Image (tube, rainbow, N blue to C red; front, side, top):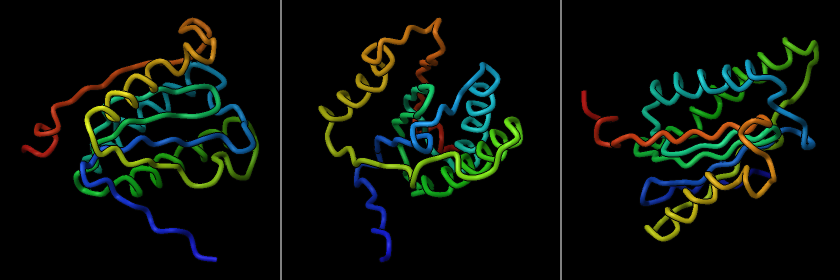
Length: 150
């Protein structure tokens, strides 16, 4: 059976989630977080995807993105392939690292945009994880116009 085609948000904003396969821990050490964050920065610049907020939990990732160019699939292809290779090589394993395709949810009004933003930032708190215990919470707010200029 064919997969359902992705629906793009008319506003350009989406809440995106990717999970470790079978609940597997994706980030076991600080260098794992650093590798993912470096690739996220590199690939978001390459694809002109604006990452407004993100949260890396030990077994999943939340992103709030602005995707004017519909480049989210390319961004996730790049980051998932790159991180899977890194993770499998580092841990001497083979196989899938991420469960299924990433999930994306359209954001079509300001109230939901604010709700998603708060949810992403509060996710580690609700999970009972402090920053010191390994959750990485970073906010990247960019002026989306500056992404397309130059």
